[in-house]
Image (cartoon, rainbow, N blue to C red):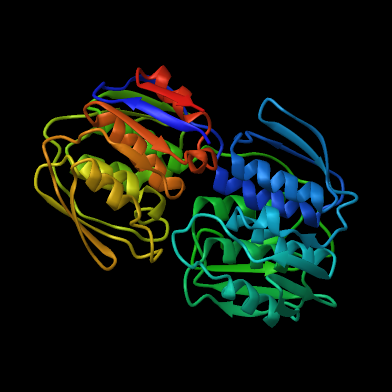
Length: 417
């Protein structure tokens, strides 16, 4: 199992280019199951979750004609297998996104209950409730979600909790359902808006994306998808914080500043220098950092996927900060590792109170999930001495060549077997 070794204490300097958004391409790949023909997707990030989804599509009968230079050509003409197996779905929760497309296109599905990061239960009951309302018959048996549908029907559905994957799943299913579907209290994330736009280009009739209500008029078929994935806002935010925590200066290229506005505002509140251009952001770390509070919210609020990285930054801020996690119930597993580095953090339920310290010290560290591992990398970059991070396969799920990108910025970082 690989480890990452970091010799901390060096400011990051230079330019880093952001890769395509992992959370945007996964639902787009699932949506290809509703088409028949050659789907062409560019800007594909080479991360483990994408590789898992591609393998899942191949198991379902899709053919990868080519996959190189961040471009994949995927033929779904023979994608007629309705079963998504445990060994793939268990490693990535987003693989449950094939449930709606399979029921809409094939009228049947057998999908293993999803896995992924251990950051909370993240149940898919809203997915199932919505699909059942559309006319699907769904039952659980031996760890699998079984579903059949003799034509899905349009519905009016209210999400009790805002759900990104739930919104995407029902929106895809409704695209091929009979009649009109109205989804309320939906997710407004850029990834959801992008999926709706791509489906519309393929022939769907969706409006309202980016607002609290999405309205879908069902169509009989969709054309193959052709698109380019937009830059990953969470990767951009991670490198912004990396520049700040190391007191460096980094130009983040190929990003959409509007997507990370909440992160920019928090960094500026902490006295970090942030300059915004049309498709790039320059971040200069400043001393002292000021402690600021943060509360995670669905988009456009402060993203839960940046909470751990921002907490690492606040461990070195002057004063006391309070971070509240409102999206996932078990997303503070990085706290114990940060405390081993000398951070002063107290937990009270879904709230973390961080009293800034003058410096962090190196330590052997254990990554517990995707974003937690990123926070440990950032903390290690700022700490004095050598840190060794284990279980870094979590990082590979969502970051493209993280150690190589950081090395190009001057970090002393290497991956070892």
